[in-house]
Length: 411
Ligand code: SAM
Ligand code: TMP
Ligand code: ZN
Image (cartoon, rainbow, N blue to C red; front, side, top):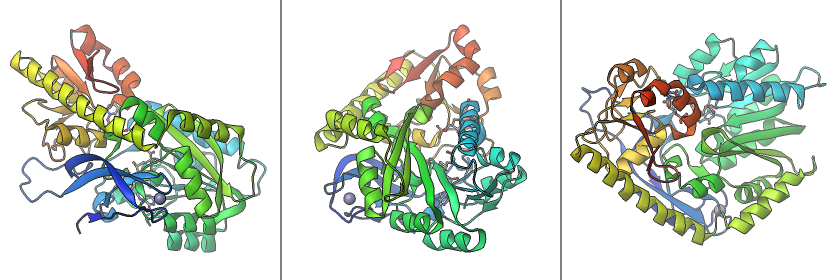
């Protein structure tokens, strides 16, 4: 299975014009054992924009089974802020969309370790999570969550409609942008959703990515970079309407889009406001994307210059957070263990492995506490508040943080 290059938009079939080439990249979540000398999968990572519907998307596709499988390491519950966000989101739906319905049914696409569905299970709400990565699905089941390990798509969604009846809410976080086969996904949503139900999904927002030059949001799993304009066009194409948008602070800036079946609900005023803001800002205009690509190149040279200068001065640097995003940064900038000696991460399935492509060793927070570097490069910048609070002692002992979002800076 190799990456499939395509010059056509995965939503409308229009021509896709490349806007940013991030070069040869590994699978962003493929952490290898240090003694693994077998061949490593690489693909060319580039983003483009559809001339017809404006959707920003990767120009080639990695087969889904290569990314999402038994050993997929990402754990949604690894961040206290995200645990709280998902508990609040679940309770929010329980008190609004699901309230007053007879035996309401809540479906989550990409439920991972059950960070959100634990709350639904605890509240006795009828629910089902789709989670094809078997390892994390088993963790969710251990928390009393009902999980199907099928990939959500037209056929699997229709089967659940048969066995469970219609869903009142279909929800997904950081998953819909991972699914290039969107036509099948939205046909599945159409089959499973109750006539007056909602389909809500939250993903990194193109508006924030451009404002923050957070190019590391682009990696194999993040196939689409959504904005309200492109999502509205996608929704309409498949018989839905964009009826709600909410900007969220999590993961460096996201939008939760709410879709309903066409004509079922009146769009909230916030939809028009965000569309107008996107027009004013030129989000998804070719000029904005060209300026973004040039700012990305500047960050690469600034970051490499800083790391080389620190190495020349005899300073030690470690990474913090072996994020999927950091695969893009290290492989695009050419950062290896010579510049960043190890990366600290709490995820058990990443520890004592090496990072994809760059092969930087991953170590535990305990190792970080015992082997404090002079500088820590904050790869998990989207969790900055949580991490800086947790690692206050590092700074008090003279340690310094480096960030590269929205620009390269020592904090
Ligand atoms: N929702 C969680 C969160 O926000 O933390 C997990 C996000 S994780 C980045 C994406 C998840 O989607 C992975 O656990 C992956 O296995 C799952 N996934 C990928 N394709 C899927 C599909 N077609 N249906 C359901 N889940 C899928
Ligand atoms: P994410 O940005 O995709 O959520 O990934 C965050 C990574 O950072 C994940 O591997 C867990 C790790 N992490 C820590 O090591 N310490 C922390 O305090 C937090 C919040 C995350
Ligand atoms: Zn298109």
